[in-house]
Length: 203
Image (cartoon, rainbow, N blue to C red):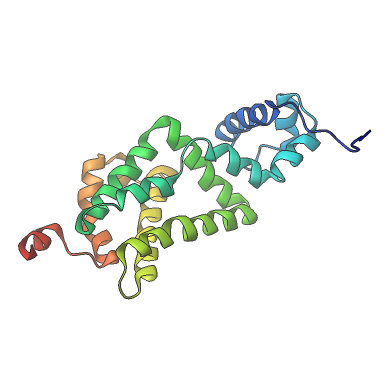
């Protein structure tokens, strides 16, 4: 007769229960002020179960936010189609993501977590490099594709921080269409893409 020693995993819905509490707490209180102990207490589980399922605080935050949105998927879909208009499609998709109250809040928590935790910042950097820069570089191809893709992502990141984290005016209050009009040319320049007007003349 087999017997297992040590702590037994929780019920099948325990993981989902922890994630529900964690997501709400991270969005309400921010990454730095929320503790694993407080999440475990509110979820009604032993602290060891949180570590059992997620390993660490950054692992829990990553899992909680993964339930909501994946920006790399959004950019991946935007990359399909005419390369010359990729910046417009990418901006439209990302702005829609951040403007939405349900998907924007987790993304702000993601940035806040990276700002306050070096280990979590490494996780975000790794995700950006593998999921965003490499995908865009593969799509655009050509010489120095990865450098151009990184420059593109750097400009996008600057816009996101300026508009949604710092809320610097007048960027914070600009209409999305105006943002797209202003930012598309430098993003095309970073990618080395042919502007739409020139692309139509070349066709």
